[in-house]
Length: 152
View 1: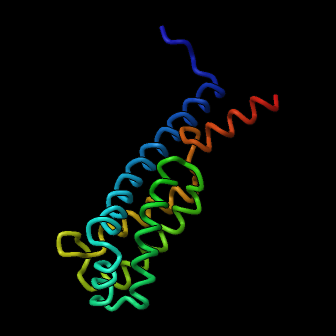
View 2 (view 1 turned 135 degrees about the vertical axis):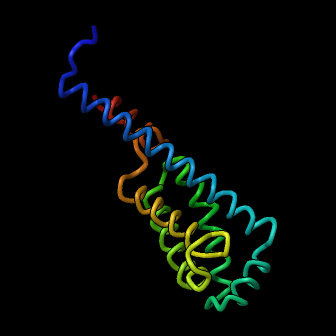
């Protein structure tokens, strides 16, 4: 027979599940961002990305290409580790909204036609992480736990 759950154990279980869910979202988003950031930096190069942005009519294409590559790479790493993840996630969400309005919206919704589907998913996931934080299964969560243990 299973012992009855108390409000404390129910809250603890809910917190563990929430933190595990945040870790899954962070890792999934980070893998996507790191892959796209590395592609911009190492496969296409900033000049290649800048050229594509210029053709798409993105203003300040060179600066936008550099910003996009760095936000995706450095931001992806920050989100993965959970250090500075809220700031990184806000930057990712803003980048994706800019991408939607400058490059994807004219192609419709679905990703197979270059539409807004994928950047909208990335933006909403990033915004969720920005609002909720990285959770306890992150480097920030580990450091906060260690700090509170040291102060106790």
